[in-house]
Length: 290
Image 1 (tube, rainbow, N blue to C red):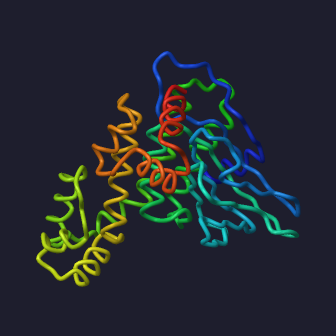
Image 2: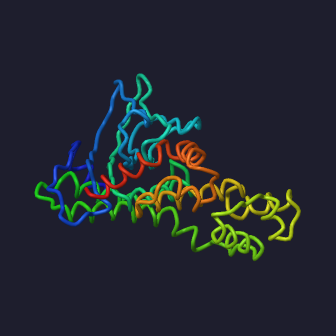
Image 3: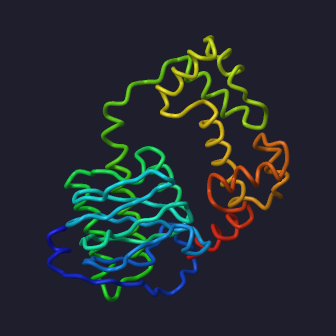
């Protein structure tokens, strides 16, 4: 399908689809196959509006650049970039260079949920197998070539793209993944069961029956995150679910997720997501209604 996409030629399409009576939670907004040659091309992840969405962009020829929260990447042929927005990043074409790529812009809470997990697991730039890239290209071709595409077909192509990324990132690791040590599993279960209360590293180390320093090293090696970072990530995930699925106040959500008060929650949430809690609730519900 990648060959067919290339043969189809350069094209950009913004989908203008009728609003569905039943919300579809993974939906394409636009898609394209483009070439940039010695021109000004730069996108700032904090200057593209407040509504959450994601970008999937696969480099075919040439090279782009990405600054992701201060970490720099060269986007070379065979690499796929996945970004959720709003977020502190910028990607651009260097002066005098060229860049050829295909891309999709998606929204909806399911696509955003998967994108966050993919980025957390692999970072924003990944090298996927040819089979996975072919599946991404097939989804992109469907979105740009089907002139009579329906909302259901557009959502199916969007899900296909997210499922391809899921398999590319998680399927291989699942086959070789080793079980976590029992002590770490005890700690993970305790964290999930006690997100409303204090979760100091010292208490978690006691549950693991390790010294604090040894526990931090073992936990980070096993999970890929420091204990405090994992606790915060789990709390942010719960906050997001409560914001979208309930009408609880921010103060009530703070109490339910272990934050001292609504202000402390709001500051932590904004640092992690780039959005205020109620802004996230409004934007997420608007996107879910697409």
